Length: 227
Image (cartoon, rainbow, N blue to C red):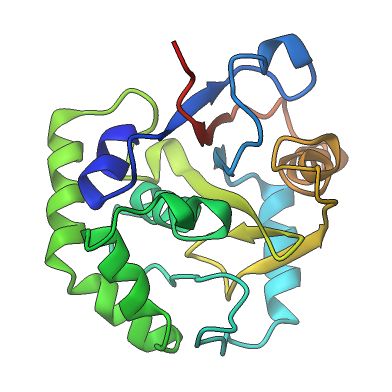
């Protein structure tokens, strides 16, 4: 994921870090804070699937667009690009925006996406040659932190970002961005409240539905550690 982010135009001041634990602070100590985004790779369990269907059934198709949109969300229409779109959601929203290199492909994608509606935005990304080239180059080279082709073993890539004091859940296969709750100024996406409203909500759904232990992985976007 770091290679893909760099190819698109994210500053080298940021990088993705493996998240080894959601509950033990010592296993998060290697990640500089605040964390700017959390990208989760997680299987679609029956309980989570039921919850998603129920939530989406009551949700109108996303109509957001323009500079006042709290987050930029892409509907996924590109096959085998779940991870790349998850990365895109992570780096073009929230405080990570300040680390997008000027005049880069990433900056262009973001500026072009802002005025577009859901369908136009998906079409723009579908026909974006820089996005396709970056995605395919990393796919061919291999990236150990996360498979950008997505759908690995049925896994879904879900990005959690903080924007406008809210925690947002972003996934291209949903009906739109999902606001999960408020965060204080000193709470980031790895804070207990954010984890509880985000990835741990999915874990609880699975446990409540009688599912087996959930096998998932996470990477967090943060400043590059000094030294």
